[in-house]
Image (cartoon, rainbow, N blue to C red; front, side):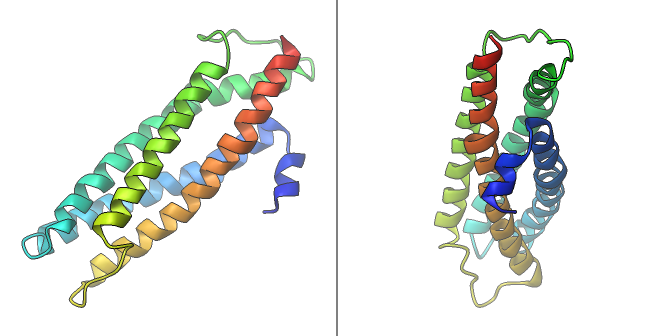
Length: 175
């Protein structure tokens, strides 16, 4: 989807696109990758110690991202949607925070943590280079991590550089 199209969406549509496309994909892919990481570590961890580390990193990434997306969907996104809707006459809701700056700051720190974990995965796997004796499951794991990484960059860009920036500006106008 083009950058021009993304900025023409209202915040309600943008939130819906992030949840429908990116959160749905991330949840499904993390579940699949956790299973693959466990399988690969169990089968090949004795001869490839990096696969044990990879299992831990995928687990940590999954835990962090699932918690992050849950917070967005339960707290931040409903507030942003209500803020946008208030421009069209809907009543303004009260939040458990004074400004979007606090929860958005937390989400941005979470994004950085995800990037660090992905970089750690790349480091221990030598940029997802498969060893000559890689199994089908290991190939699927590395391919899945690469696909997740690509989607997460788009996902985090939409949140950090579009949704959050526009929501803060909207909050400033509505104050």
